[in-house]
Image 1 (cartoon, chains in turn green, purple):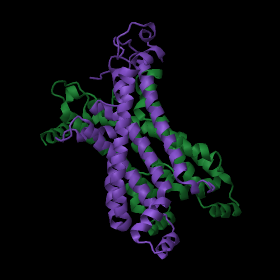
Image 2 (tube, each protein chain N blue to C red):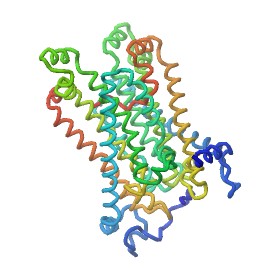
Image 3 (cartoon, rainbow over the protein chains, first blue to last red):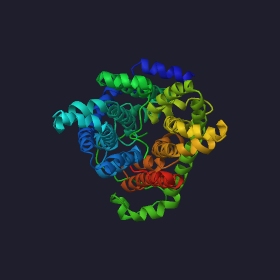
Image 4 (cartoon, chains in turn purple, green):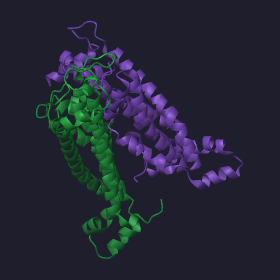
Length: 245
Length: 246
């Protein structure tokens, strides 16, 4: 209990360390972490979304598209960071590479399953209306696949936050994991305070993306989900990629 | 503690396990097979064994709890939402943060128990959802047919509905197992067991590449092996599902 209060005091003090006035503040470390995660998520989305969406639209390479996330999920994040350290040395680059390797497959598979799973009759109707492939993808398939696409984005985003925290154990000197890795200086109360911040950040990211998803979901899809009783359950829990195989 | 800048690789002075003065390690090459064979029984195998034990216990306990909750939610829909909410929040909290948050609680502390508590909580969401979804997707007419044959609700559950829910359940076990194996590497930070131990040791005084590749590679191999094993188990237990076109 005492440690808990100390932890809250630590957070309130902006992570000030009495023994080392030059230590980075909590705000600084949090912003650093947000920056790292933002870059990681952005690259993962840039890689995963287009490939997954296009493959899903063409209904090609389904085995690869669905199983890449199985392999990606199986990779222990610390092991990927460790192997990256061995090959590329320590630092920010390795962290970002590892983040993309771990998060992009999730985005890709969910985008694939979402787009490929759109009711073929609707796609047929769109084709009958004279839309070409690009238009069908953009105006019909993507809006209908938003729930699954966003499930992938949310899972990937939370995963990136978690891995960025671990990255400090694997030799990267920054982000909130910096405090967690340095128990000697910061004591358990400091580590606990940083852990609370990390947890809060992850929940915040998840919540924000859930709101964005709700905003982007077309009204018709939202009504249908509400009738099926799925909207609140989906809003609360990140979905592990794809249907059970 | 671990205070490193992004400097170049430093040749470590200790190589873990038995001391040696061999050229391969001193050159810090990417992978020294001699080091692996010399340190297998002292460093790598105990870590692997501890890792497997950690993972199996976590998945077993997680399955037991999720199964009980799922059966409860199957009968009473009102249970479902709070369980998903709580397990969802636990799942979203990054593993390292959850481990550290659990450490101050007195009965736990820096031990395997803390690691297990956190690992179990990560399995709950996946297992619970998959078991409940699997049960719910049993077609109504099958349930009615079972009832028509004179089975009680309990008989119907164990003889008809659960077997039909098996693919979904095993898929959940598969995802949970792989997740736990991955997170157990991080758990080594607070409980000093598992494949994370050699990984952290290899980063202590400089990047000792062989140990990183060996331990990291073992973790990846273990996860993929467990995944493959469970796929085979799924195919073996559900012969009727194999004929369904995918």
